[in-house]
Image (cartoon, rainbow, N blue to C red; front, top):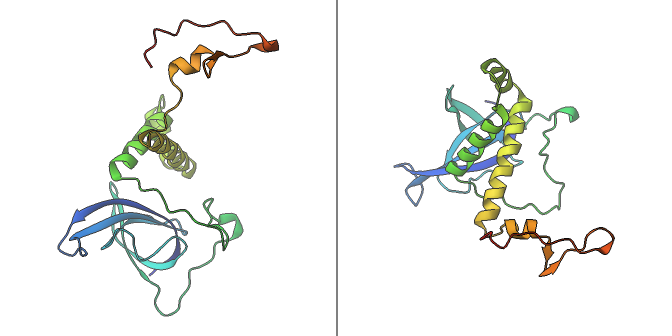
Length: 200
């Protein structure tokens, strides 16, 4: 049974189950390991008993070409430890040093994550032919780009949902700051633009 350290845990969703916890639900997470394995794992609580950095042993209970792997994750038995990666194989999301405060991962629900990944894929595969797309999906660098792009899209969504909006079109284009014309080069006042008809 493989043993490896957990590098990320992303909450996916909850579903009703006869084997669920006190709330009658099982909770699904996407768990990634340092050895490159990742898949879905279910727990009886929303916060699993394992965390990022823990060395755990796992079994791949299902490997579906369309839906990916399903994992059964257990505590390491018999005092075994996870193998250490060579320095040049350390993940780029290495854990902070001891004593560094760690912020909890923001919750991203399944539909939001799916939308982020779908949009990222559309952006990164735009104007590419089938053969080029096939080459892309076999590349680790491509999926890292999908991960980063989707994360950025979701962060923008969360910022807007939190009520933090960018400046309006009128503010961005009017050249007016705090009700006064913005000085141009040399201190001259920039000419006003006809933005009074823009409603936002």
